Length: 560
Image (cartoon, rainbow, N blue to C red; front, side, top):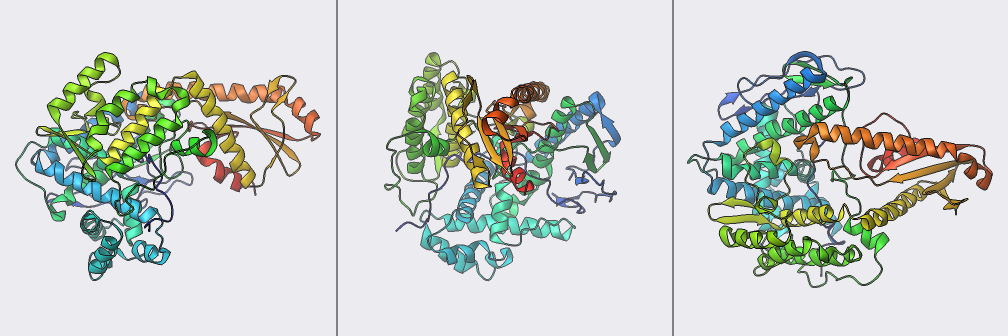
C-alpha cells in the first residue's frame, strides 16, 4: 500500500524570491565568533515596510540616505561584490571535499523533509502529528518517535537525514532567537516551509563550495554546519534582494531605496513567482496532462512507495516529459542527448545521490556537443566562483575531486529547465501552450463565479476568454510571453528593457480590445465591459488591468 494519498508534483523548481522574512525584528547574530550590529529601528512607511538587511561581515553595511538611478545602481553593485567577497572569505577555511559532501547531505535531507511535509500521507492523522510537532520536541523528547514514524514510512535512512536537518535548524533558530531575530520555526511544518523558501540559496551555496572552500577544516556535524545556514540566511538572501533592487533601479528612474546603513526601505518590490514559490513556465508537464495531451501515459505503479525521491522516479519523469511534449518534436532537440547522457547514471541502487567519474562523463559531453553546440561542460557542471552568479544556476552537477556529484532533485530540475529552453523558441510550442493557458484561465475564472460565454470569434476577430459576471462582460486577453527571471541577477538591465517592452505590448493589446468592444456588447447584449490582460509570466507595472497569472486568485477574491 502506498504511503502517499496522491502523487508528488514533478519538476518543482527551486524558489527564487521569498517574501521578506523577519520584518520588524532586530538582526544580530554571531558567526565564527563575530557579533554583527543590531538594526536601529526606523519608522515604518505607510506603504512599504522597512526590511532588515542582515549584513554579513564586521564592516558590512548598506549606504546611508536615499538613492535612485545610476548612483543607486552603483551602490548596489558595490554591495553585491562586497557580499560575494565576504562569502568567499567565510568559506575559505573549509576543505573542498568533505565539507561540500556534508552540505549536499543537508540539501538531501531538506528536500526529503519538504516532500514529507507537503505531500499527504494515507494516514492523515500521522501526517498532522509529524508536521504539527513542535520543533523543540522533534529534536528532543519526541525524536525517537519521529524517527521511528518516518522509518515506518520510507526506506533509505531518510529519518536520519531529516532529524539532522531539524537539529541544524533548531540550533540556528535558537541562536537567532537569543540575539533578537525570530524566524518562527516553531514546528516541523514551519521548518519545512522555511527550507522551501530557501532552496535556491542552499543550492547556490553548494555550487560555489568546491571552488571557494580551500582550507582544511572539515564541517561534518550539525554544529559544524550552522555557519553555512547563516550564510544562506544572511548572505545569499541579501544577494537576491540586492539583485532585485538593482533590476528595479534599471527599470524605473523613480525607484528609490532608503537605508540607515543596516536596513532598507524601497518604494516598491516585485513578486515574480508562481503559486507555491515556483518559477513560471509556459506549460508544465501537469498542464499537458490535464489540458493538452490525449492518450496513455506511463503509470507510477512500478515505483517503490517506500522510496522517497529515487532514481527510478526521475526515469519515470523523463518518460512523462517525452510523451507529454512529443508533439513538439522534443526527441529532435538536444534534450535527446541530455537524456542519453543522464539515463545511465540513473540505473543501479535507488539512492538519492547520483555520481559519475568526471573525465569520462565530460568526454561524452564533448562528443554530443559536436552534434548539439548548445551543450557544453558548463551546461552540466557548475564550476563558477561567483556566489551571485550561482543563484542563476540550473546545472545538475558539482565537481568534488575526480567525481561529479548531484542528486535526483537537481537532475529533475535541470531536465525540466532544459526542456523549456529547447522548446521555448518553437512557434508550435508557443501557440499550443497559449491555448492551454487560455484553458487554465477559463477554468480558474469559472471556479470563482464568472460565467463562460461561447464567444471565440466575431466578424473574423478572435477573442481569448470572454466571461460575464454581475451583469457585465469581462474580456481577458491571455499573454504567454516568456520572461527569463534568471536575467535579474545576471543581466538586470536587459531584464528591465524586456519587461518594459512586454508591458508596452500588453498595453497595446488592451487598446485594441477597447477599440472593438462594441462587438462584444452587441453580441452579448450587455452595456458594461471590462478588459484585462492575464500575463502568464509576471511583469512589473502598476496597471490594474494587467494581472499576473500567479495573482489571479487573489485578484478574483478582491472582486467579491
